[in-house]
Length: 312
Ligand SMILES: NC(=O)c1ccc[n+]([C@@H]2O[C@H](COP(=O)([O-])OP(=O)(O)OC[C@H]3O[C@@H](n4cnc5c(N)ncnc54)[C@H](OP(=O)(O)O)[C@@H]3O)[C@@H](O)[C@H]2O)c1
Image 1 (cartoon, protein in one colour):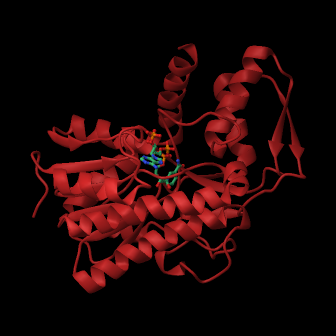
Image 2: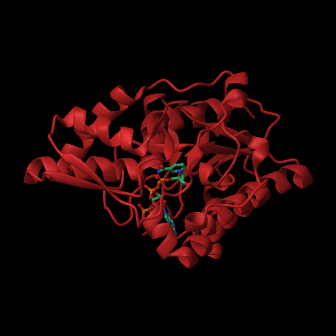
């Protein structure tokens, strides 16, 4: 069944940064039948409730943007919660979708599923060829279980479940809490407050050398629609921008954008994380998809949203 503007689409995790971007994108494109449920009204960790809901609404398509998500600090601190909640959420959704006869499902993973010292750029088939980064291994193992589950269902039951592996994301509705956020929203928040409080020195976690690829979240939403429409032979596809800089260079980029005069120092006792995570995008491109936003445009839109948020 081809997706059309009347198809029933369940977007799990629609309040999050990725989920809200997907909702905006699908609404803008004229999709009329979106099903949305906040965690308060449906806890996806609960198997019975998840299944009853999916059975009741019988969606044609499901996008899984619900997950327990966070940056290096919280991933390392709350490994048990990260592995338990993520495995429960995705397992409940994938299996319920199978029982309800969902036509196509997209599961969102993350580039941290790949080995810590992977060859660069990282191709999809480098999965499980080396040790994971220790700080987020619980999260990565949960995501790997999700993609292997999709793969197993596709092989045994001939389902159409696709795993998109996005690189680091940023955009409107991001999480700016320094304890739980990813690196880029943390940079924006730290530099914004340095500007407001006239702080003269900013400390970077680690030595600033790790390189990160970064993509504006609306590009991922676009990829979700593109790949729901597209017939694919592969069940794992990397999604990225191809734009990569060191953490230090991202600090310098935001410092320049906010036009602030600060000195940078390094807290080298803090972990660096994976040295480099650049995704190989050949496969996504071979299907005809590529990102549209560059960092400057994405940052301007993100910072505008950030200012609205902290003003509230
Ligand atoms: N952010 C990134 O840089 C990034 C990079 C690569 C991949 N991804 C992937 O993209 C997906 C979404 O990430 P995000 O950044 O949008 O995260 P997010 O902003 O934290 O959003 C996660 C969403 O999941 C929902 N959720 C969590 N636990 C739930 C539960 N037990 N029941 C129901 N809903 C639950 C939350 O609902 P409530 O708001 O109602 O609590 C929230 O809407 C994840 O799979 C992540 O791995 C993110």
